[in-house]
Image (tube, rainbow, N blue to C red; front, side, top):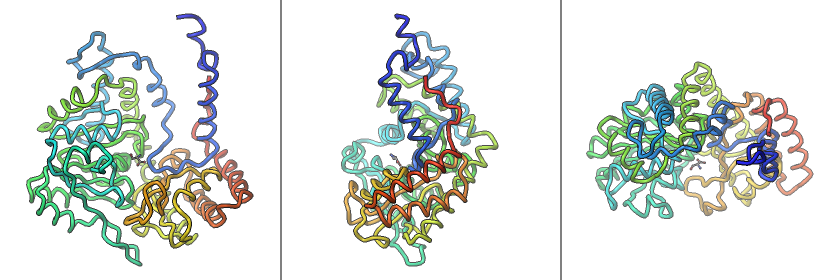
Length: 428
Ligand code: DSN
């Protein structure tokens, strides 16, 4: 390796270094309100950027197909033990590269192609990997979908329709019942799903991708021990590196491990697994409990602010880290896509999202999804949430007026300067 190749990233590849510096600047100077994103700690990033990126470790600790894995074993064992302790699980697999691969591994491990699986439909708040026809899950298994109850004036509708879940379960006798959502703002109680699964002899899988950090922090009920298998991502409310994990009872351990490797994946990303271990330890600290509670309080404050700006909130508000806004009553012509673009130009990053029974396509949508995990990490509180709600109202009332967008962007920059997630960041 030449001396130049061992220099800093900036010396070795200024082009990539500049892109990374620009991205850091974007994250520090604009509002990050994507409900599935967060700001990891420098410790998590350091582990992700470690020498373990060099190591092949196909297999599991103590049973690898390559030599030299003493430290890969140590770090993967540590990650597994920590996550088992965090959630009270019997068995953990920390190798899934993402939530999508964790979900697919469960289906591969405990179902046969063509088996029936009952899950929530994408346009009702479910996930692509819960059987969307464009996902390999929907192409391989026979999915039957449930959704939410109709919207009600008083906000008590748009809840998971458990009567429908039970009716469909009794009629279809699925192999697996999946609970878990990607765009849903209420607490999901795993117990009624367990009861339905027991009634029809189905396995029960809980996809905790979104609430994992709220569960770890004690804000939401823990599905571990209620569900047979729990999947989650490590990078959303849990604030770890990008990735997935699976927790299960001992009974399913062998099938799940074999499905992840060699069933679905090759070499595990041990540098990311090291970062998962760091994140699991962070989530066990008392300060994480406080963080999870602030995420929920901030989401409620942002929901209140948006409601007072005249937006209709799906399910009448929030009990978790996200808010789904139905734009149609605010401005019948304003699509989620146009709203997302205007907010982006004003320095407010969020994503368009379908609302239940959305007449528009997933690419256009009639809604927005907003979340508080990242800006809560940056220490924003309810006062800032009220400000953000009013900035969003200003932008969307006048979304084609570039002067308004520039003025808001400057206010966002000033706000973000006091809530910098990485005040000591150095890009080399
Ligand atoms: N992309 C994730 C989310 O934003 O919720 C789901 O895959």
